[in-house]
Image (tube, rainbow over all chains, first blue to last red; front, top):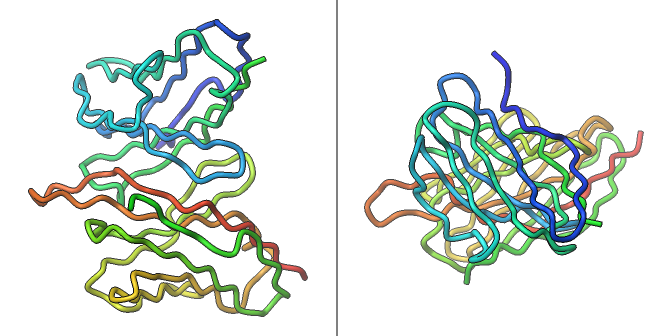
Length: 114
Length: 117
């Protein structure tokens, strides 16, 4: 049973470009969380999704960021018009049910904006 | 009120020693307190967790001590090993008044633990 798969592992974008980060949850998992980790800081909650629904997006910046988790396929975190401050590691976690105590994190996508 | 403060920022321990990492919080709405271990280039992995109605939880060499009145909790790693060298994060989950807590965690800033052989 493969773990949570995130791709790409590393992503370099120029300022103003779009970044798309993908998260394939573990088999049988229908809950996905996205977190962002800035250098030398802890992880910060961004959004919680279930299949086809955004449950809590209270940690998402109001502009340029969006997330989806379609019925089929991976969850996507999309950042439009990236800026240098978006450079960070983005982690997703998935769980079968609601509890984070049963969630597993992926290895993250390290976004660098140049 | 939303913060979880973690200390120390870094910790060096000799093999066989005890590693102690402390966290403090203010929000009484937190209802679950996990610790995560993260190796370089990897995602965080759940290490051990505690609920506020318990004062201590032990799993192998890892123990969480929880002081609800002081709003503090700590991780103790007994007989520390070089393989324990990693970054450790404490976290707290936002409880939901309706009893349907999920995965919205607030993390501490992390502690880089180095265990020397």
